[in-house]
Length: 305
Image (tube, rainbow, N blue to C red; front, side):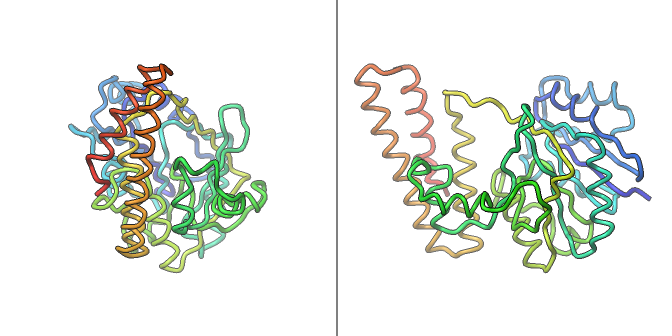
């Protein structure tokens, strides 16, 4: 019997995927690894098939998004537990054994995640409480720097030590293990409402609503190699992130709160368009301002619907 199935969704990160696969080991249980590739152009599929022949590969002809691609892997998985793992991760030591053992010993836990580390081994924020509408106005918007400290402290659980095992509302989607029964009961990712971003928040909300606990286990550690930020904004990232935020609030809080949030977010992009335009006219990094203006206008044109 397969104990743990690991689903890794890949898109053009060949070197990171190689590092991730090389870090996976199971000392005390049966392991299955499934790589779902979203039409990569960097020979990722060839690498896996040549270097890791025991890994199951699902090669898509098109990019099916984070939700669609992971759902393919989840459907193919045969394990008692299913881990959704980003390819930009490296599992340290016996983390997998610790996570599986904890689930075996705690049947009320429906999902569990490790402590995520930055490449320099500092702790990466990965625990969350469910967001409120107030949280949404501040988190990852131009107002974040003006947020009352208690708002984001509560949301990111910075008021609880990151070194203790604890129950949480939801976990960063870079590495989470779910019981197979969880998917059987509440379904996998909501691909209809989320292409990427907020999908793990929505799934964890359904897990909690069904009565399962979600646990953060810091003794198990995984390095998360988040990409370095760039000055050049990416339109798709902005659009998917903000649209998914609106969809989440519509699904869980109703049409009116979602409409308020949508108007606020669109207004914030209009504000940024004005700000970037003024900076460009004043001669400040005009190429950068032009790029950002193009991106922000693309967001406005979508209406975040």
